[in-house]
Structures are given as structure tokens and as C-alpha cells.
Amino acid sequence: MSPVLILTIVFAYFLILLVISFYTARGADAHSFFIGNKKSKWYLVAYGMIGTSLSGVTFMSVPGEVGVKQFAYMQIVFGYFVGYVIIALVLLPMYYRLNLTSIYTYLNQRFGVATYKTGSSFFILSRTLGASIRVFLVVNMLQVFVLDKLNVPFIVTGAIIIGLILLYTFKGGVKTIVWTDMIQTTCMLLALILSVLLVMNQLGFSPTQMITAINEKHLTNVFVWDWKDKKFFVKQFLSGIFITVAMTGLDQEMMQKNLSCKNIGEAKKNMFTFSFILVAVNFLFLLLGAVLFVFADLNSIIIPAQTDQLFPTIALNYLGEAAGLIFLLGLISALYPSADGALTALTSAFCIDIIGLREKNNWNEKKKTNVRYLVHFSFAVIFLLCIIYFKTFSNASVISTVLTIAGYTYGPLLGLYSFGMFTKRKINDRLSPVVCIASPVICYFLNAHSQQWFNGYQLGFELLVINGAITFLGLIFISKKNEFYLST
Figure 1 (cartoon, rainbow, N blue to C red):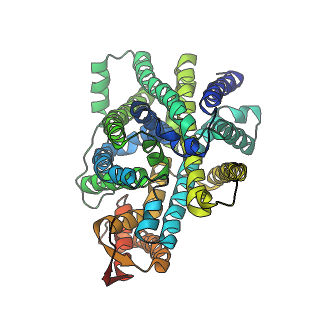
Figure 2: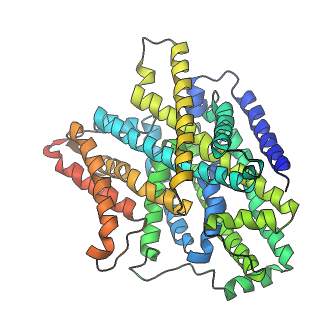
Figure 3: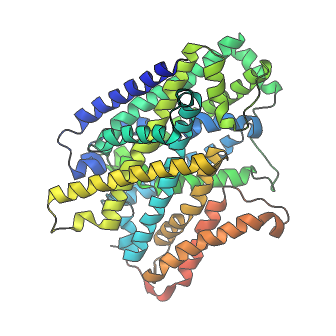
């Protein structure tokens, strides 16, 4: 495909988003930026959240891992589903009852200022790293397959992409993102389905023949029962539950969209609908991966060392221009949700939780808006610096990296919220940052020596659960038996 054609598609897609931003951001204020004036339609939020949850990681990394892990990722996906049910029945009602804009305000009400700012800081760290590595995956693909041929430096590619995202999220915030995510999810799902059909057509296979070929290569194995294996079912399933509760239910970006629905009833409809669709979509991505590996085998295509690049390699080099265009459309659609919602959520968390922007009664609205703009721009710069770092130093599978980061950074949040909701004990608020920092450090050493210390057992994504449990125990240690929190 012509690099000029590819770039034209990228910018045309962006212009569509910019037009949507222009119309949705008219008359936007802080309330619409943070929670969309609580007027978002639940079905639009549910549909758009699919794109946000999947992003470029699922689009490229999940299919690429099928050759090594087969369909074992579905073990985590089944856990995801249970996690979404817990969010709908436990966390969302609490957030609506407390009328929260930032979900970390709960920590202030329950524990105190130090815990509140610690919780929000862990979210900021986790979402910054997680979102930027998702953006890196897509930007790097554009660089490798397109812009290297034009001698465009990676830093310029990254700066342009981040700049485009910054432009259409700068003013409208959540009010804009609910609509842009809907467009992006549609394009991503179309690209997924059409890619599977195009590969089958290229091979001349009927659906039955395709399934037979996949089974012959033993690519559809889902369950792993070896308890020492990182892919052991119980570990993966439980990890999926806790990953969802932490990375969605305790994540300002994901909950910010849910809180933009007008009431708890609509927010629950959103979450239940979204959870069913997401299971099916993840299965389709694994099916795409199996189809790609069969295609590579039958055409003697060398599997890239970084399996994330298998999909673009085949789509852009072996399936013709139509397939390349479809892949590119899906990839761009995966790129923008990786960053737009994250930028908005990070801006919200920093302004509300760290700066306390809403409590600055001596600041006029213009000054508050200017500060919000500055924070939004600053996080965009941080994103750019992160993707440059990942380009320079990272070689791991992106989806594994994202979930590993989550294990370290969302663990303390899981421990804080669990302790707050399931006990009534008061803690020494000033010591909670020490507990929340110590827990990931302990987990790092456990992970590094697990095989040596635990008879060959390998820690996987259950690291998140262990991290949360250590935080929980640490909070018990700094709490007092005779002092209890009285909910109002």
C-alpha cells in the first residue's frame, strides 16, 4: 500500500473525529468535560466502552499470542464477565449513592486526605503507563510499516498522533468521547469481522474447513490444568475477575463514562450489555489469531519475533489492498480510544483529586479552565515521553506488559476499596501511603523469586490479587480495634 494513501486515511479519520468534537463541545463546561452533564445514553456508553476496553492491545496482541497460548486467554475473559457483574451490582450503586465525579473521592470520605490522594496517584500512574503503551503499539506499527519508508522519525510520528488526539479532546471531554468511541468501536468491529472473512476467502476455505484447519493445529485449547503453569485456569479466571474490578471498577476513565449516564438503572444496563458483548468480541479476536496462524503456516510465512506484528504483516503484505485498508481502519479505530478517554480521565483525576480544582473558590472559571487545559496538555506530553521510552527499551508482548503493570499499580487500589467496603475499621491516614507503596515492592520480590521459593510455582496475573491482599493486611496493621468508621 502507498504510504501516502495510508496517511490520507489517518488524517481523514481524524477530521471526522474533529467534526464530532466541534459539535459535541459547543457550550461545554467543566461539568460536561468531567461527566457529560449526566446526559449520556446508556446504550451509546455500552457500545463505545467496547472500543475503549479492547484498544490496540486486543486488536494486535491477542491474535498474535494464539500461536503460543492458543485460546487460553478466554480463561481470563470468563473472569472478566464475572468482574463486570460485580461492578454493576456493588461498585456502581455506591458511586451513584455518593454522587461522585471522581471515584477516588470515596477514599477521602472513608479514610482521609492522604489515602485519597494516594489512591488517585496510583490510578494516574497506572493509567498513564497502560494507556501510553497501548498507544505505542499502534504508533509503532504505523512507524514500522509506513513512516520508516518516508524517513519520518519515530518521535515526529508520536508527536503528531498525540497532537491530533489532544485537539479533539481538549474541550468536550467525556461529552465528546461518548460519541467518538461509538464511531471507533464500529470501525474496529467491522475490521475484525471483515479480516476473518478475507483470510478465509484468500485460502478458499468455507467456515467448516477453516474450523477443521484450526483444530488440526491445536490452536483452540482453552483450559490449562497444570497448577504450576502461569496459564492455570483457576489463576487466570480469578485474575480476570480482579483485573476487571480493579482496571474497570476502580478506574476513573471507565467509571467516568458510566457516571455520565443519568441514573444508576441506566448505568447497570450499560454494564450488563457491555459485558456480554465483550466476551463474544474477545472470542472473535482469538478466532482471528487462529485464522492468521493457519494462513501463515499454509503460505510458509515466517512468524515475527514480536507476534504483535503478525496481523499487520499478513494484512499489509499478503491479502491485497482492500485487506490492508480494512486493517488500517481497525487499527486507527483502536488507537484513538487508547488515549482520548485516558487523557480526559487523567485530567479529571489530577484536577479534582490532586489540585482540588472544584474547591478553589478564590479562582474564577476562566482560571480553572486554563488550569484544566494546562493539565490536559501536560499529560499529552507525558504520553509522548512514555511511548518514546517503550520504543527504546520494550520488547515484551504488549498485553502481558499491560496486565503486569496493572498487577503492581492497581493492587493497592483493590486493597483500599476492599478494606473500606468490607470493614468498618479506621486507619492511620498518614501511614496508608507507606502501606500502598510497600505492597508493590513486596510483590516485585515475590514475583522475582516465586519459582525458587514456592517449588516451581510461577506467579502470573494473580499478582494483582496478592498485591491487594498485602495492602489489605497492611491497612489492618495501621488500624485500631476500638475505632470504627460510621457510614452515613
